[in-house]
Length: 255
Image 1: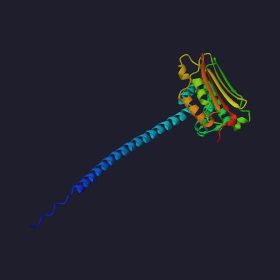
Image 2 (image 1 turned 45 degrees about the vertical axis):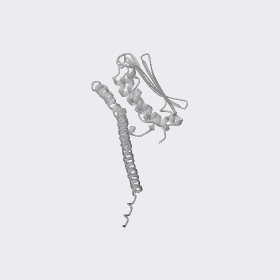
Image 3 (image 1 turned 45 degrees about the horizontal axis):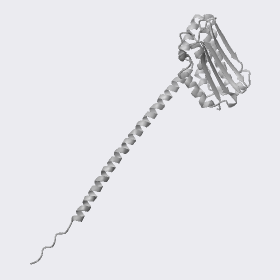
Image 4 (image 1 turned 90 degrees about the horizontal axis):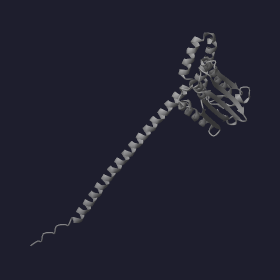
Protein backbone atom coordinates (compact mmCIF):
# COMPACT_ATOMS: atom_id res chain seq x y z
CA UNK A 1 0.00 0.00 0.00
CA UNK A 2 1.15 3.50 -0.78
CA UNK A 3 1.92 5.51 2.38
CA UNK A 4 0.22 8.93 2.73
CA UNK A 5 2.66 11.83 2.74
CA UNK A 6 3.25 13.28 6.15
CA UNK A 7 1.55 16.67 6.65
CA UNK A 8 3.96 19.62 6.44
CA UNK A 9 4.83 21.30 9.72
CA UNK A 10 3.73 24.97 9.45
CA UNK A 11 4.38 25.77 13.09
CA UNK A 12 7.41 27.92 12.29
CA UNK A 13 5.52 29.89 9.67
CA UNK A 14 2.61 30.43 12.01
CA UNK A 15 4.93 31.65 14.75
CA UNK A 16 6.68 33.95 12.27
CA UNK A 17 3.40 35.40 11.07
CA UNK A 18 2.18 35.80 14.64
CA UNK A 19 5.38 37.65 15.61
CA UNK A 20 5.17 39.79 12.47
CA UNK A 21 1.53 40.64 13.18
CA UNK A 22 2.32 41.43 16.81
CA UNK A 23 5.29 43.56 15.78
CA UNK A 24 3.15 45.43 13.26
CA UNK A 25 0.47 45.95 15.90
CA UNK A 26 3.02 47.29 18.39
CA UNK A 27 4.55 49.60 15.78
CA UNK A 28 1.09 50.77 14.75
CA UNK A 29 0.09 51.51 18.34
CA UNK A 30 3.39 53.28 19.02
CA UNK A 31 3.08 55.33 15.84
CA UNK A 32 -0.47 56.31 16.82
CA UNK A 33 0.71 57.28 20.31
CA UNK A 34 3.64 59.24 18.85
CA UNK A 35 1.35 60.96 16.39
CA UNK A 36 -1.06 61.82 19.22
CA UNK A 37 1.83 63.18 21.30
CA UNK A 38 3.13 65.22 18.36
CA UNK A 39 -0.34 66.65 17.78
CA UNK A 40 -0.60 67.56 21.47
CA UNK A 41 2.81 69.28 21.36
CA UNK A 42 1.84 71.07 18.16
CA UNK A 43 -1.43 72.23 19.69
CA UNK A 44 0.42 73.49 22.77
CA UNK A 45 2.92 75.34 20.57
CA UNK A 46 0.06 76.89 18.60
CA UNK A 47 -1.62 77.97 21.85
CA UNK A 48 1.65 79.46 23.11
CA UNK A 49 2.18 81.22 19.78
CA UNK A 50 -1.35 82.61 19.85
CA UNK A 51 -0.86 83.70 23.47
CA UNK A 52 2.40 85.47 22.58
CA UNK A 53 0.76 87.17 19.61
CA UNK A 54 -2.13 88.28 21.81
CA UNK A 55 0.29 89.47 24.51
CA UNK A 56 2.27 91.41 21.92
CA UNK A 57 -0.89 92.99 20.56
CA UNK A 58 -1.97 93.96 24.08
CA UNK A 59 1.47 95.47 24.76
CA UNK A 60 1.44 97.38 21.47
CA UNK A 61 -2.03 98.70 22.24
CA UNK A 62 -1.00 99.72 25.76
CA UNK A 63 2.09 101.52 24.46
CA UNK A 64 0.05 103.24 21.76
CA UNK A 65 -2.53 104.32 24.33
CA UNK A 66 0.23 105.59 26.56
CA UNK A 67 1.81 107.49 23.67
CA UNK A 68 -1.55 109.11 22.99
CA UNK A 69 -1.84 109.97 26.67
CA UNK A 70 1.52 111.67 26.45
CA UNK A 71 0.16 113.87 23.68
CA UNK A 72 -1.06 115.98 26.58
CA UNK A 73 -3.96 114.37 28.40
CA UNK A 74 -7.41 115.53 27.28
CA UNK A 75 -8.37 116.00 30.92
CA UNK A 76 -5.71 118.65 31.43
CA UNK A 77 -6.47 120.37 28.14
CA UNK A 78 -10.20 120.36 28.84
CA UNK A 79 -9.69 122.00 32.21
CA UNK A 80 -7.34 124.55 30.69
CA UNK A 81 -9.79 125.37 27.91
CA UNK A 82 -12.50 125.89 30.52
CA UNK A 83 -10.26 128.42 32.22
CA UNK A 84 -9.68 130.20 28.91
CA UNK A 85 -13.43 130.78 28.63
CA UNK A 86 -13.44 132.76 31.86
CA UNK A 87 -10.17 134.64 31.45
CA UNK A 88 -10.97 136.38 28.21
CA UNK A 89 -8.36 139.07 28.85
CA UNK A 90 -5.63 136.43 28.45
CA UNK A 91 -7.46 134.27 25.91
CA UNK A 92 -5.27 135.16 22.92
CA UNK A 93 -2.10 134.35 24.82
CA UNK A 94 -3.56 131.13 26.19
CA UNK A 95 -4.72 130.00 22.75
CA UNK A 96 -1.26 130.65 21.31
CA UNK A 97 0.30 128.56 24.06
CA UNK A 98 -2.24 125.79 23.55
CA UNK A 99 -1.58 125.81 19.80
CA UNK A 100 2.15 125.48 20.45
CA UNK A 101 1.62 122.57 22.82
CA UNK A 102 -0.75 120.79 20.45
CA UNK A 103 1.58 121.23 17.46
CA UNK A 104 4.44 119.72 19.42
CA UNK A 105 2.43 116.85 20.89
CA UNK A 106 0.74 115.90 17.61
CA UNK A 107 3.63 116.35 15.17
CA UNK A 108 7.06 116.66 16.79
CA UNK A 109 6.40 113.90 19.34
CA UNK A 110 6.05 111.30 16.55
CA UNK A 111 9.85 111.28 16.17
CA UNK A 112 11.97 108.96 18.31
CA UNK A 113 14.19 111.84 19.43
CA UNK A 114 14.22 115.61 19.34
CA UNK A 115 16.71 118.29 20.32
CA UNK A 116 16.79 119.34 23.94
CA UNK A 117 16.19 122.93 22.83
CA UNK A 118 12.84 122.00 21.23
CA UNK A 119 11.84 119.95 24.28
CA UNK A 120 12.55 122.91 26.56
CA UNK A 121 10.33 125.15 24.38
CA UNK A 122 7.51 122.64 24.76
CA UNK A 123 8.07 122.35 28.52
CA UNK A 124 7.91 126.11 28.99
CA UNK A 125 4.81 126.44 26.79
CA UNK A 126 3.10 123.62 28.67
CA UNK A 127 4.03 125.17 32.02
CA UNK A 128 2.78 128.61 30.97
CA UNK A 129 -0.44 127.10 29.70
CA UNK A 130 -1.11 125.03 32.81
CA UNK A 131 -0.30 127.78 35.28
CA UNK A 132 -3.33 129.76 34.06
CA UNK A 133 -5.35 127.35 36.21
CA UNK A 134 -3.46 128.15 39.40
CA UNK A 135 -4.15 130.64 42.15
CA UNK A 136 -1.86 133.62 42.75
CA UNK A 137 -1.13 131.99 46.11
CA UNK A 138 0.88 129.29 44.34
CA UNK A 139 4.55 130.09 43.79
CA UNK A 140 5.26 129.15 40.19
CA UNK A 141 8.85 128.88 38.95
CA UNK A 142 10.29 127.90 35.59
CA UNK A 143 14.07 128.09 35.28
CA UNK A 144 15.56 127.31 31.87
CA UNK A 145 19.33 127.30 32.27
CA UNK A 146 20.08 125.16 29.21
CA UNK A 147 18.60 126.78 26.09
CA UNK A 148 21.41 129.33 25.76
CA UNK A 149 23.97 126.53 25.98
CA UNK A 150 25.16 125.24 22.59
CA UNK A 151 24.73 121.67 23.84
CA UNK A 152 20.97 122.07 23.91
CA UNK A 153 20.86 122.15 20.11
CA UNK A 154 22.86 118.96 19.63
CA UNK A 155 21.67 116.81 22.52
CA UNK A 156 18.84 114.47 21.50
CA UNK A 157 16.23 113.19 23.95
CA UNK A 158 12.84 111.43 23.68
CA UNK A 159 10.08 113.96 22.89
CA UNK A 160 7.81 114.87 25.80
CA UNK A 161 10.06 113.13 28.31
CA UNK A 162 9.47 116.12 30.60
CA UNK A 163 5.68 115.88 30.32
CA UNK A 164 4.94 113.25 32.96
CA UNK A 165 6.29 115.07 36.03
CA UNK A 166 5.17 118.47 34.74
CA UNK A 167 1.61 117.28 34.17
CA UNK A 168 1.51 115.49 37.52
CA UNK A 169 2.65 118.68 39.25
CA UNK A 170 -0.58 120.34 38.12
CA UNK A 171 -2.74 117.22 38.30
CA UNK A 172 -1.84 116.32 41.90
CA UNK A 173 -0.38 119.63 43.02
CA UNK A 174 -1.96 122.36 45.10
CA UNK A 175 -3.23 124.92 42.58
CA UNK A 176 -5.81 126.78 44.66
CA UNK A 177 -4.07 127.38 47.99
CA UNK A 178 -0.55 128.24 49.09
CA UNK A 179 1.98 125.92 47.52
CA UNK A 180 4.82 125.65 45.02
CA UNK A 181 5.29 124.33 41.51
CA UNK A 182 8.92 124.54 40.44
CA UNK A 183 10.48 123.34 37.17
CA UNK A 184 14.23 123.62 36.61
CA UNK A 185 16.50 122.52 33.78
CA UNK A 186 20.28 122.75 34.22
CA UNK A 187 23.54 121.40 32.91
CA UNK A 188 25.65 120.11 35.78
CA UNK A 189 28.97 119.01 34.38
CA UNK A 190 28.12 116.56 31.61
CA UNK A 191 24.63 115.92 32.93
CA UNK A 192 21.30 117.40 31.94
CA UNK A 193 19.33 117.76 35.17
CA UNK A 194 15.55 118.16 35.11
CA UNK A 195 13.87 118.83 38.47
CA UNK A 196 10.21 119.23 39.36
CA UNK A 197 8.90 120.03 42.84
CA UNK A 198 5.30 120.62 43.81
CA UNK A 199 3.06 120.77 46.85
CA UNK A 200 0.70 117.78 46.88
CA UNK A 201 -2.95 118.39 47.72
CA UNK A 202 -4.26 116.84 50.93
CA UNK A 203 -6.96 114.88 49.08
CA UNK A 204 -4.45 113.14 46.80
CA UNK A 205 -3.43 109.55 47.45
CA UNK A 206 0.39 109.61 47.91
CA UNK A 207 0.74 106.45 45.80
CA UNK A 208 -1.18 108.10 42.98
CA UNK A 209 1.03 111.17 43.16
CA UNK A 210 4.15 109.04 42.75
CA UNK A 211 3.45 107.94 39.20
CA UNK A 212 1.89 104.82 37.72
CA UNK A 213 1.77 103.65 34.14
CA UNK A 214 3.02 107.03 32.90
CA UNK A 215 6.16 106.68 35.00
CA UNK A 216 6.67 103.10 33.83
CA UNK A 217 6.34 104.19 30.23
CA UNK A 218 8.81 107.02 30.81
CA UNK A 219 11.39 104.65 32.31
CA UNK A 220 11.03 102.20 29.41
CA UNK A 221 11.68 104.99 26.89
CA UNK A 222 14.72 106.12 28.86
CA UNK A 223 16.03 102.55 29.10
CA UNK A 224 15.84 102.14 25.33
CA UNK A 225 17.89 105.27 24.64
CA UNK A 226 19.99 105.86 27.77
CA UNK A 227 20.28 102.55 29.64
CA UNK A 228 23.00 102.96 32.25
CA UNK A 229 23.46 106.62 31.31
CA UNK A 230 20.65 108.21 33.30
CA UNK A 231 19.27 108.34 36.82
CA UNK A 232 15.69 108.95 37.92
CA UNK A 233 14.69 109.79 41.48
CA UNK A 234 11.28 110.72 42.82
CA UNK A 235 9.96 110.81 46.36
CA UNK A 236 7.43 112.45 48.62
CA UNK A 237 8.91 114.55 51.44
CA UNK A 238 6.09 115.64 53.69
CA UNK A 239 3.64 117.28 51.30
CA UNK A 240 6.31 118.09 48.67
CA UNK A 241 6.78 115.75 45.74
CA UNK A 242 10.28 115.89 44.27
CA UNK A 243 11.41 114.38 40.98
CA UNK A 244 14.84 114.53 39.39
CA UNK A 245 15.98 113.16 36.03
CA UNK A 246 19.67 113.20 35.07
CA UNK A 247 20.89 112.31 31.58
CA UNK A 248 24.54 112.34 30.63
CA UNK A 249 24.61 114.68 27.64
CA UNK A 250 27.78 113.01 26.29
CA UNK A 251 25.62 109.94 25.72
CA UNK A 252 22.69 111.67 24.06
CA UNK A 253 20.38 109.54 21.97
CA UNK A 254 21.46 108.82 18.42
CA UNK A 255 19.32 109.29 15.32
